[in-house]
Amino acid sequence: MNKYERIYKELRKQFSDEEIVERYVIPEDLSDQEKKEIEEEFRKLRLKSLKERTEEQRLLSELMRMKLLMKDYFERSGFEEELSFSNQLEQYIKILGRSKKDFAGEIDLHPTKLSRLLSGRENPNVELVYRLENHCGNVIPAIYWWRLHSRKLEEEIKTDEKKRKIESKKVKNNLKFRA
Image (tube, rainbow, N blue to C red; front, side, top):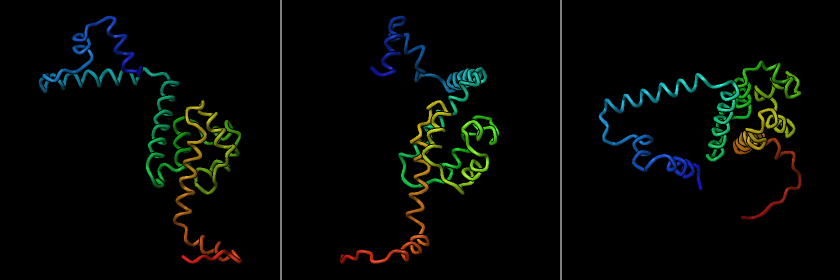
C-alpha cells in the first residue's frame, strides 16, 4: 500500500468520499476569484509553515533538496560544472552555515586541503566521501559524493586530447590491430 492509499484509508475512517473531495481536492467549478483566494490562503499557510520550521527541519529540508538534485543529475548524461563535486561541497558548507575552517575541523581535514578541493585543484578520496556521508547524518550517501567527482573525471577522459597525446608518447610496443 503506497503513502496516498494509507492517507485515504485514514481519512475514510472519519469522512465520506464526498467530504474528502470537498475538503482535500480543489473543485473544478471555482471562479477565478475563488481560485486566487484559495491559492493566496495556501501561500500564506506555506509561508507560515516555513517560518515556524526548526533549524533541524530547515537543514534536513535543504540536504534532501541537495540529494534530490544530485540524484536527478545522475539520471541525466554529461557533466555539469554547477553540479561538480567542488561546487556541491561549497553548497553543503553554505547550507550548514559554517566557516570553511570550522567545517574542515569537523571532518578532520586541513583547511588548505579543503580550499584546494573547493577550487577543484585537488580531487576527493574515498576516505573523504565517507566522512561527508557521516557528517551529513547519512542523508547524502558517500556514493553520491563520489559520483559527482567521477562525472568530472569522465568528462576529462572524453575531452582531454592534449593529455592523451602526451601519455600515448610514453607507451612503447603497443598492440596494433587492423580494423
